[in-house]
Each structure stands twice: as C-alpha cells, then as structure tokens.
Amino acid sequence: MLLHVPGPILETEGNMVRPSLWKYRYPLFFLTLLGILFIYQLAVVILLRKSKESLETSFTGSKIVNPYENFGNANGEKISLHTHSNEVWFTPERHTVSEIIGEYKKEGFSNLAITDYGQISDTDDKTYIRGFEWGQNVKKRHILAIGIKKAFYDFFPIYASRENLNWVMDRMKKLGGYVILPHPKLNDSYSKEEMLSIEGFQAVEVYSPYGDDSKILDSLLSSGKNVHCMASDDLHYFPETTVKQFDQPVWKDLIQTLGNQRGRKGESFLRYIVTSDGVREETSVLQALHSGSFYCVKKFFQGASDPKVPLIQVNADHQIQVTSKERYLEIRFIGKKGEVLQVNPDTNSAKYQILESDPYVRVEVIALTGSILSNAIVRSE
Image (cartoon, rainbow, N blue to C red; front, side, top):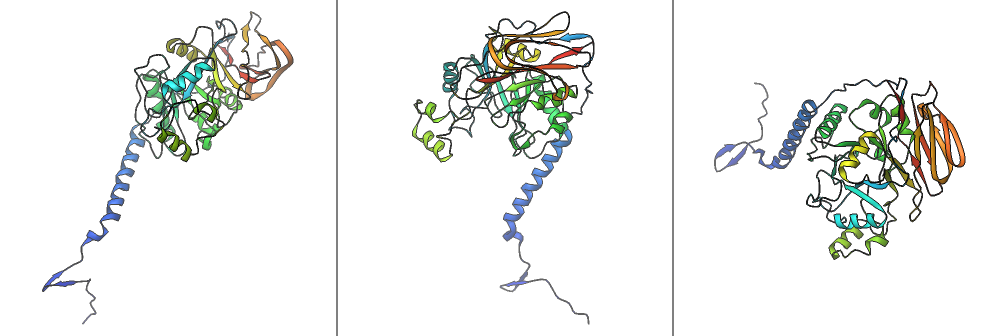
C-alpha cells in the first residue's frame, strides 16, 4: 500500500472541514488591487497613444523669419507663466490666487498664469491667464498648457511611453493650449534624447529654478524642431519676508513650517518672459507665444533692476541688428549646435551677417543684472 499524506483537516463536532482562505483576505485584496491597476495602466498605455508624425529637417530656404519683426519698443511687458496656488485639494497650505497676483503686480508684472496641478483654478477671476500642469508621476514628467480651455485627468500615474506623451500634448493643443515642457532637468524628467523623440510641445523651460540650460534649446533647434525658450519661476512658495505680510490662518503657518517651506529664500520674480508693449491679456499673450515674439529673462539676484530687452531687426541684406537702451556686458550670436558665432562685449548694439551656412541664429545677452535669451531667427522656404 502506497504512503498517502492527506491535506490538513480540522475536526469540529464530528464534521470534517478544510481550512478557509479567509485568513489570507488582506494579501489577496492587495494583490487584486495591484492586478486591477496593472490592467488599467496597460490598457491606457496601449489605447491612448499618438505616433510621431513629423520628420524634422534643418531650416532651409532664402527667407529669413524674425519673430521680433513687429515687437515694438524695448520696454515690454513682464509675464510669469508658471505659478501654483492653494486651489488644489492637496495643496491647501500654498498661497491664494489673490496673494500671488498681488505680489507679482508689486514687482512690475503685467500678468501671470496660475498653473495648478490637474485643474484650471479660480475661473471666476478673469484677469489672469488660464493654464494647468499635467502629470503627477514620481519622475516629474509634467507638461504645462497655457491658455487651455479645459483641464483633464492624468491617465498615466505610473508610466507613460513617448507615444502617450504625444497623445497628451496633441489633446492639449486641440483644447487651445500652448504646450511647454517644464523643468526638464528636475529628476532628469526629460532627457535630450527624449525631447528629440517626442512631438507636440512648443517651448521648453531652459530657465527654471530646477536648472538653467540654454544649450537644451540648441539641441532641439539643430534637429529641426522650431521650439521656443521659456523662463519660469515655477512658484510654489514665496520667501519668508513675503509670507509674513499675509494674514493667513495658524494651521497654514503650521503646515508650511512642518513642511520646511518657511524661511526659504524662494525663487519668485527671477525668471519670466517679456512680450511687446501692450501684450498682456491672455489672447494677445497667446498670439505672442505661438509666434515666438517674446524674450526669456533670468535675473541674477532678488531685488535687482530688470535688464532691458533689446530690439532685434533683420534688414534686406540679412543682417541681424541688435540695439538697446542699456549697455550690456556681452551680446552673443549663437548658431547651430550652440556654436558661438560672434561676441560683442561692452556695448548696446551689435550686428551679425547671416551666412548661407546658418540655418538659425539666436541672441543671448548678458546684462549687469541678468541674462536674456531670444527665440531663433530661422531660415524658411
């Protein structure tokens, strides 16, 4: 007779019963949730995607396109396009929309965008520019939409392929948004290779509290992507000197203190764009964004005077003429792959002859109190 080892059997009042799985209910419940999340994530990754359609080529042609052709005089309007308020349910300790608008107006800003996570905030106030920041993933692969009509949910909380990001940016543009890749150097959220492999964004934050790098722009332009620069504070909290002026409740003070947000120096008022005089309302700002008719500015320190943006003109001989009311430390002309084509030190004007070998030229200005980037002047058919 073969040896037989039966499974565990419990005897209760003469009845023979096998052990129940009930004691494993918590691990099983957890595994079920993981399974549902995995199936959901797999489904959206497969279904919500858009393949890359356009093939970038180097800028060619005899026509020179200057985004500053109708810029007007050199005073301009200061605009901030990346700020976060307390309107989102999980950020109640941040500043109110009215506090943010008030402080930026004190610093000479003509307008700003409130770009909270996942929603268009405080829509009853029509004075500021609409926007929202998409993405709540750990790697900080976020996308900023300015002037968008409606926010939408992040369907990819764990993982998004490049095709998924293309789908998101395509949807943003269909909803009227101007699409920006924010803080690419934060957690290396967007590598140069990845930015070259996706499409749909119109600008990239090359001036950000999480890393300033204008060379990112040259990598994209050199590949044929006609994208714009962007400079943003990415405001989350004002510095302590500003917060002390606010009449905020004790619980908000406590949360800010426990979260180590009080007493920080802050990055407010340092990075922004400048549009032409009178271009301050949402509609006109969006037109300037789409055409590239704005400058990106980074001030070197808090309380510094604003560096004056130049006028950039291109004459019939394809010469770029840069003039300003301010005397700069340097005026640089930058070409393909970030090559420095010409440097003019200690001057308020400079001229560069566009060569046939130049697919694009952009201008960098180093002033006493800050640096200024232009968008590219490009060749076109």
